[in-house]
Length: 321
Image (cartoon, rainbow, N blue to C red; front, side, top):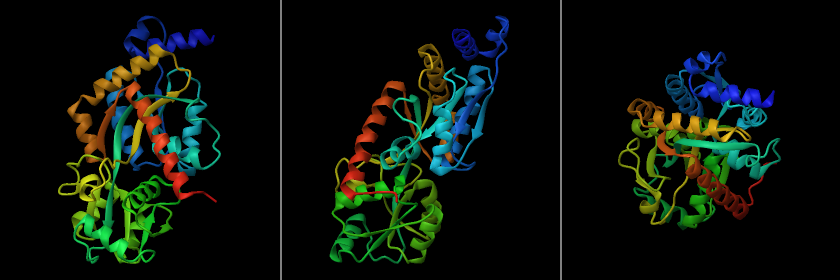
């Protein structure tokens, strides 16, 4: 029966019409999104799902399963039958970072397999506009002039934003105090109000405030500048920190054990989708930076991210109580 179901799945991914010709009815493919509607991973996954439905000739249905910082949906996907009918909209928090900070009910390496990365969520260094520093280097000099005086906000202890900020603080040699919040919105409200000095939060969350003049945008966390954040220089050059490069990733994964031909077929479909200008534009409109990586490159990238964030957590003794 197991071999039969795998055979049916392979036919389904070849397209509904082909499967029906063989007498096997195609059934919808679901993509589990472990976040609520409107969150960055959700927006990217829905763009990809629409295009995959067109390419595969088979319905790809978004299935939001939020909770526990993305852990509930990710666990559900990891434990799903590896027949190709369940995909995961994976992201750095539940797949890369959380397993480094706490015990989780799945093994991200053994229980999940990468298919393709589709987008990145860069972070912007922002402060209240009244902060006297005009450039990133002036900002760093100001922080260094009074060690321990200034505070930075994050969307929560152990969140990607927290780790990216600690990466920046360590590279720049800053001695500052972390103030965790329950989400980006309340963190940025206090930065806007001047109660907290600065934050490194997602481009999607910060840029509307930067454009409206409520926040001052100093630099972006990725090695390359973004067209979505015009005039904002990379931290690597703005702060004279060569090689500084950090972002949250969003990609498509499957439960480990999905047969190679099915993964290849799915990867090919995503490849076609990502070449579409419509897909690229829709991802950009979501406030995300396009970052397409094919299966092998994505797998290497995941290993690099594991090493990088492990080191940040170790150096800063970050723990979730």
